[in-house]
Length: 414
Image 1 (spheres, rainbow, N blue to C red):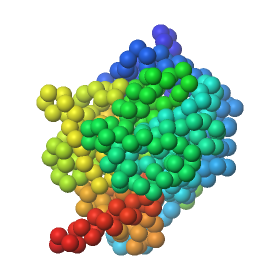
Image 2: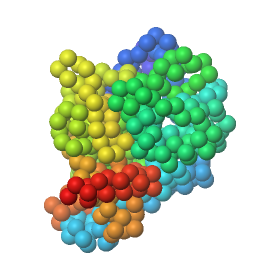
Image 3: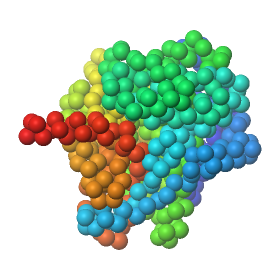
């Protein structure tokens, strides 16, 4: 590793040299894993960097995104929603129109191509809301991999449609009944599997989290979101947006949108976490509101933990944001002041879910509804000549049964 140059990704007018060769974004990141996985991670790091330098690899990646996934996704002016809010113009980056229904397919395609190049025959993945699981099962079917997806049993209950989709695509879905039975526990089980099967298996991690090089790799693949949005806004409006808004679980859709704008100081960025029922331990998943710096699942970042370092339980109406930690690059940009973070609670997210559906005929994922809710809040404080892009990271088909249940429950207690 000594003397190896870090990948420098193009962003707007400048470049960012992060992470460093050890996988650190300032004090965040790194590799905190067993010796078995350290060897696999070093091999993955070398393979990814070599592949990304090759024009043929990047060309195949772009072609599959265009022909199979449906990129570029539209940048859509939400006229009715803008008129109802009465403030800034609201634009939606329509990641919900990707094949499989979310931004997750972009990273899945990139990692599947890399796994094939490395000679792996099997993919494993974790999933919370099920969208990454579906994306992994999809690329496994497309490229001929065996596939197993780990999913918390609570999330299996909430996301029955996506569970069926994964099975229909030929993948095995393994319920995880440990801990809170959600995303954190699914990641733990996937890491255990990978440590036993590294010779034949690639762990297709779905978010910009975990040990290096996963945060770098996922961000590199997902930056296509922001690259497209940048070109589209310049084409439509002749200038850059004033604000970007994205929901934040691990952080893949957020860093994918934000990264190409990092060197544009006029563009404000807002990452929105899950405020759950309240900002009390166990009631939310807002790591920057209630967490502290620690190590979880291979990386140093902000974590929801008690004073003894024990990981706290989390809660969110959205399975994809229901996680105890956040990606290390987002932690770096939060502490540097470049990206602002806030949270939206369950009730406000449910209201935004209904508002966007009613005004624009677009049903958002519950995860994306957190970004929509904050975007509406922000738009009302800005003048009509300002521009906001909200990353609509996924569609809400998977959530309609759960939302129906929650709304009936609320009506019954009102």
